[in-house]
Amino acid sequence: MPRLLLFIPLALFISLSFFLWKGLSIDPRELPSALIDKPFPEFQVAALLQPERMLSKADFIGKPVLVNVWATWCPSCRQEHEQLLRIAQDNKINIIGLNYKDERAAATNWLRQLGNPYAFNIYDEAGMLGLDLGVYGAPETYLLDAQGVVRHRHVGVVTAQTWAKLQVMIQKLGVNQ
Amino acid sequence: MLRFFILVLLSITSAYAAFDTYEFKDKDKELRFHELSADMRCPKCQNQNLADSNAAIATDLKQKIYLMLEADKSDTEIVDYMVARYGDFVLYEPRFNAQNAVLWLGPGALLLLGLIVVIWLTRSRNNKNAENTEQVPELDAKQEKALQQLLNKDKKS
Image (cartoon, rainbow over all chains, first blue to last red):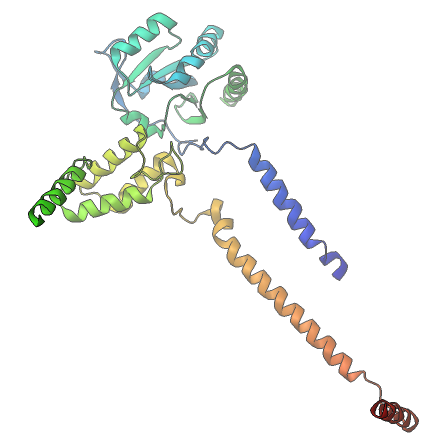
């Protein structure tokens, strides 16, 4: 028995190394959303392209949706725009834009020039809906289920790999309902 | 000369005040504002608190703290509001919960473990010493004589 006790430091060392090694692949900037498995916040905000139209949570309940936080001042948003257009073409899920702390004219221009992958855009000029959602920078993308509950948050550029992962999650949502 | 100095000093303080865009009527609220924004972490630039950070989100959160203070919200209400949106991450002094219990209790547990090991080691060592003294064999008459001879030889040389 005392002989076995001698292995305790080795075991501790191995478990410590495992955690440190695991830590290498974790991006500290990617925070878990505090809203996971909680309902998307209630809101009453105007649409980007039709300023007279008021949008609310009711506008996207019934089917799973992606909510993409973007702005024209955000270079990474331009980078992911192509991929968003491809997702829109796949026609598997609606993307809702959350235009975050932006200028209406610039954002409208952006959609005209680069194409519009969004079913509609929420124009969150002051960033107050973003604040309720726990957004800390653009781009961020949220997956909501049919009840409007936040299921996943992706921070940063949406790539083809991200879309592959999202599709698996969307399929799971479909099966569960 | 002194007057000039005072003038310079006064102009410095007024320039400094211009940086502070939040004006409080209540001194107490101002103090609470500084405490809250110093104790909360900016979610974007993660090694700065809200007070030090110039990130857009930090400015928004400070604005929100300011508005909530002006609306006579309590400190816990403000902290709860932030945690509900940005998680425990925003707190520089995280609250105790199941997820971080290891971090809170780990050092104490390790210290206790170390103490137990130290006590255990010293005890077993003491026991061994005690055993050793007990086990010194008694010398019979012949051996005693031999020992005395050896000691005497040592003295002579």
